[in-house]
Image 1 (cartoon, helix red, strand yellow):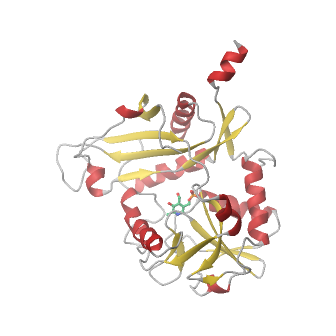
Image 2 (tube, rainbow, N blue to C red):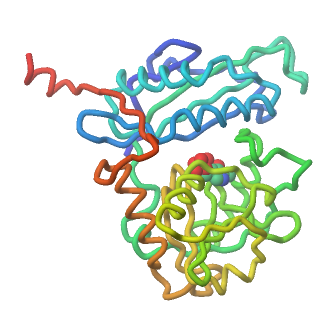
Image 3 (cartoon, helix red, strand yellow):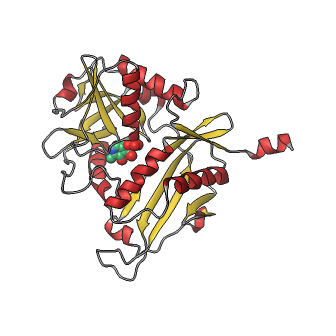
Length: 318
Ligand SMILES: Cc1ncc(COP(=O)(O)O)c(C=O)c1O
């Protein structure tokens, strides 16, 4: 699917895709001073249903605060921008990318606070991150050789652009070694997270995931999964996970807006469990996708519907 759309929302208005440009001396381009989010909208009937929109924008506003670049917009304004962009692009199913960044200021000083704060929101068509086979059978991953930066070095809980260089190192290394992904360890050697996703393991029927103190982004999908698991009567634990627990786990899976829920069938070429999706992962996945596709009740109002009319439908009713 081509990454393209008709419009991008920029600093409060919709501009044409090709006009959404930045100056080459923008602070963010040089120093990584950007904050972003990734959201998905799922098509249900004639609506684009945005998953956990307010939660994503609350996290974005928090990340902006940590980055000394206050968000120019409130959660409500970001939600309005989301609806406007989906409608303008006629997207019912889309990946949404809001971004706040330091633009082109009076100098290239590292403390860029004299410069402007710019904001954009894009919607692009984007299907499943992994193939249908990978989603069913699981992916092969390795433990990356680059550690996550420790607490007090960068701010793992905030989704700040520059921090993703660390994720890219591990991901590119994994790809070059023939793996689909890498999981990073934190500075103490405990399991942290993937390049852009959280990790869960299942051991003796208990669902276990690293704590927020293991240099992870507090994933919104992670929160949904823990909530669904508790609803299904599955015990959930947040704890330090030693690397070797990845090898003795019965099941391992990744969670995130982009990857959704993706089983892992091997870590460092050591087969996990039966080497395919396990029963707990499957139960969580069925419930999660059931909510997103409108076949199971959205008990906690995680979806915000945005009505998106299509040209063909407009013609039919005219
Ligand atoms: C580093 C990192 N960890 C975890 C996640 C998963 O977070 P979420 O479920 O909110 O998409 C993401 C994606 O935003 C991420 O970039």
